[in-house]
Length: 277
Image (cartoon, rainbow, N blue to C red; front, side):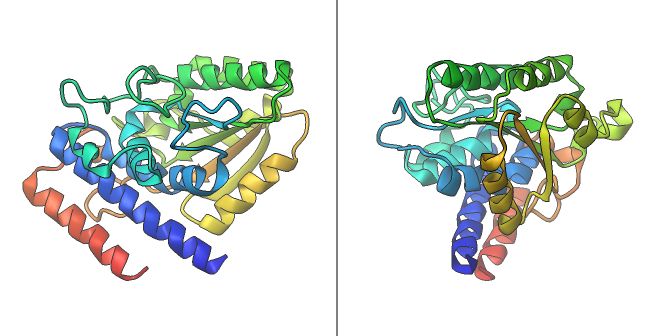
C-alpha cells in the first residue's frame, strides 16, 4: 500500500497543478475548495470507481456527482490525468466555447454524470441515480461530494432523509469539511455543526477521516461497501487551499484566481512537494 499511496500522492499533486493552471488561465474560478478535495477526487478516479475514460457512458459504470460544482477545476484535472482528455485543455477553463465551464456540464464534457452548481441539488440527483440503480437491479455505486458550506442548504437534508428512507446502501456521500466558505468560517456564517450527528440522525452510517490520508480514505470507502440498508457519509476533514502556501486555510482564495506572480509561487510550492514524493 505504501507505493500505491505514493503513486496517488503524486497524481494528486499533478491534479493540484491542474487546478492552479486552470484557474490562472481562466483568471477566475474556485481554487481553495478544489485543492482541499483533490485527494478525495484523485482516489475516486484512480482507485475507487469502476469507470472507463474510453467509454464514458458505459451503462454499468459507477457514477460521480460533484454537488459542490464550483470545485470543477479539481474534477477536470482528475479527469484529464485519468485520460478523458488532454491535460492541455485545462488551460481553456471558463473560456468561451470551452467544454470546461465554471461548473460541470454533462452536455459539454463526456464523463460528467450530472450538471451541477446550484448548491444542494447535486446531492438530490445522486440520490435519484442510486434509487434508479436499486430499481434496475444494477450493481453500480453512486458517489457525491458535498461542501460543508453547502450543508447550510435545506435541500441537503431532504435528500438525506429520502436516501435513508429508501435504504440506498449503494450511495456514498463525501463531505469536504474544510470549515471555510466564501464569507469565512462556516461556523460564523451559518453554523451547520455537528454534521456527523445530523447525518446519523437522518439514518446515515457516518465515517470521519483525515481527507488527505490515503490509508484513511481507502479504509473508509472499503467500509462503506460493507454497510447494508443505509447510505454512508464520509466526513473528510480537509485543509482549504491544500498544497499552496498562501492559500491554505484562507477563505480569501475560495473564489478568485492567482495572478502571474502568485501563480508562479503556487506552482513552485507544488513542484517542491513533488520532489518529496
